[in-house]
Length: 287
Image 1 (cartoon, rainbow, N blue to C red):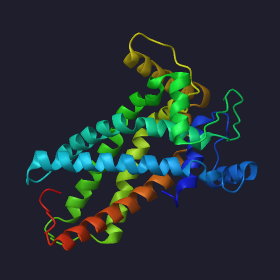
Image 2 (cartoon, rainbow, N blue to C red; image 1 turned 60 degrees about the vertical axis):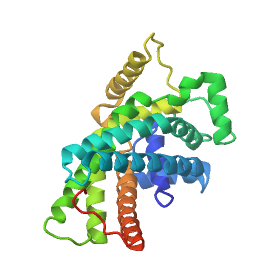
Image 3 (spheres, helix red, strand yellow; image 1 turned 30 degrees about the horizontal axis):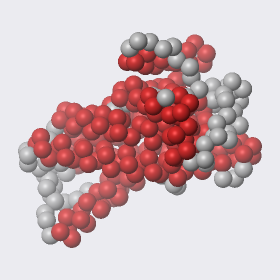
Image 4 (spheres, rainbow, N blue to C red; image 1 turned 90 degrees about the vertical axis):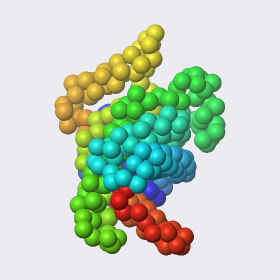
């Protein structure tokens, strides 16, 4: 995440700042560095790492716990992997959304926006941001963007379904571990497909977490959230066309695909090493 963090910074700026012209990722990063300094692409790194650690722990723990409980040694299928991924994703969203709301705002704090309507914020850190958001916007503001986030559980669900399916195909009839290159490639392919399909919702999610969009209050919070998601999607299409929904996709694909591929590679290697140290044979049928 640290290595590819500037790519995520470029993606977020393009998603939130509607008046910033979409250009190549290197051009956006060069522009940010010129205007805000050399370390600007790494602004908000610490809260993002904290959120990522919590989020990955919750997701992977839930994913494998549900999988082990449901399958009980039986062979898995892509459909089951998708359902398990969705369940783990929902739990992850409900538990960690406040952290992602905070880190989105900290990453954008001090940025030079093209959109003059965006109001500056003044947070001194993660805890201060949590306190200020609760005091000025209410506790519910910590869960801004929960609706698109819940819809986005399809992202890791699709990702794991494709990843597990490709892994089963490569391991069919072979009882040895996949090579590092094979793990890297299937991890990259799985994440690329999932990211592209769900990217418009990720754009809406970023805008809502930033908290600058003032949505109409409805008696039903669910209805209000759905109206906000629909409005932001339609508004982006009207102003920028269909391609406006995919503004920043280049940076997002570069960042998430490379990060996910390396994450899967390290995950598989650590898991295999752990089984060897424990003297336990790694189960193949339940994967």
